[in-house]
Length: 74
Image 1 (cartoon, rainbow, N blue to C red):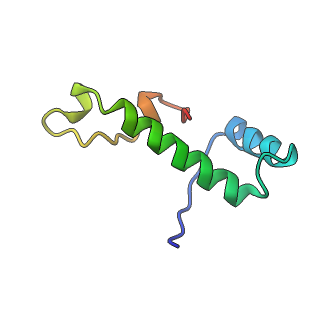
Image 2: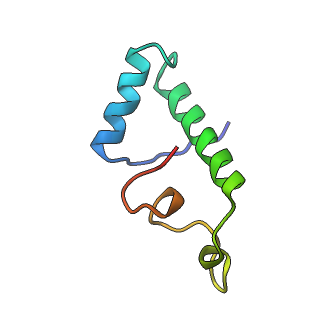
């Protein structure tokens, strides 16, 4: 499986740690993989907006999932 390195804001890292500590996931790797997968499915289901799919738009901007600047919405 390919490896990906990401940098996330501290509040997201803390939320992932809490999910693992509560037993929602076995470990951080599983949590991150599942949360990204779920986020991509949600994004795909909602479809890209016309703005993102317009000329020159790839639908994947550097400003985070679902157009939020600093947060990744799952």
